[in-house]
Image (cartoon, rainbow, N blue to C red; front, side, top):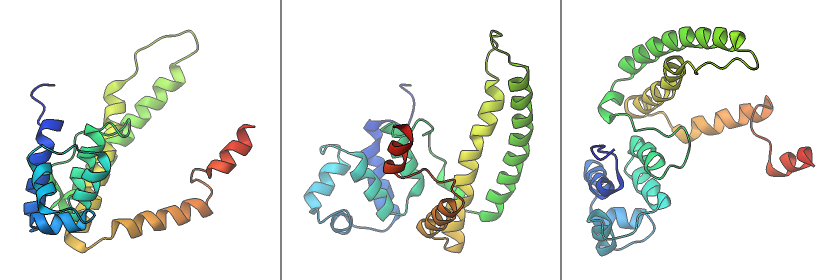
Length: 189
């Protein structure tokens, strides 16, 4: 992956670009990320400071560069489904994002039906390769969902944290959210 533009060496420049796109000075971003001085910010942007996931996420949050938070998850391998981020240009128009989501949902539905047939036909002792094309099509829903949400943030002022909080409250009521640590331990004992 030498030619991959998403690598740790490029992260300081990406952070600088996000700061500038947000219209923030080095002094301003320093204050926003925890009272850091301009010199520290300069060191970050020039690759002289150690980058941590926490620093990068806070930086990109303050710049409202949500796709770049996805980049942090990808580069630091914070989650197994973390993938290269969506181009922010694709998140500029909510109408296009909805059209893309509908298209992706239709393709994922077909892929899910194929996967269901594969699972039905897959018996113990029978070894077949996973239907990766179908699984990839289902995986594409993650990016389509993010594209739609990010575009609604940009074009209609959607508050992502409020959305996440609402989902969490409903998931807890519907008992589909992950149980608290104490609950999981009690079940496993």
